[in-house]
Length: 117
Ligand SMILES: [Zn+2]
Ligand SMILES: [Zn+2]
Picture 1: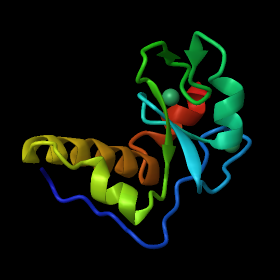
Picture 2: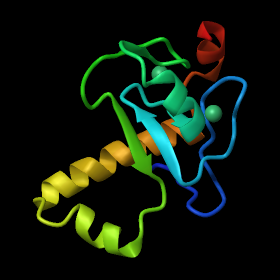
Picture 3: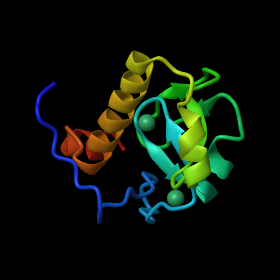
């Protein structure tokens, strides 16, 4: 792995819905295509099926393509959520989560995304 710059404190993810961009807190909807949406837009967009990502038009048909997630899990929840997994599984999960974060904070092809949207 190369070095990844991650700022932990101030950065917040924002809803990827084009006209929204609200700072995400509480619950958010995470897409398999590395997009994330606020609870309001998640509830609206992804309750219908087949769901399509409003940011990139990916079809999200798999059971785990859309996950509603708690952004700030409680200490109790954190203590338990990865308990029981093998170390490589924990690292695997972490690397996916970090890749997602990096993609959100520092999108690889911003111009392209706006072009597509
Ligand atoms: Zn939104
Ligand atoms: Zn998407």
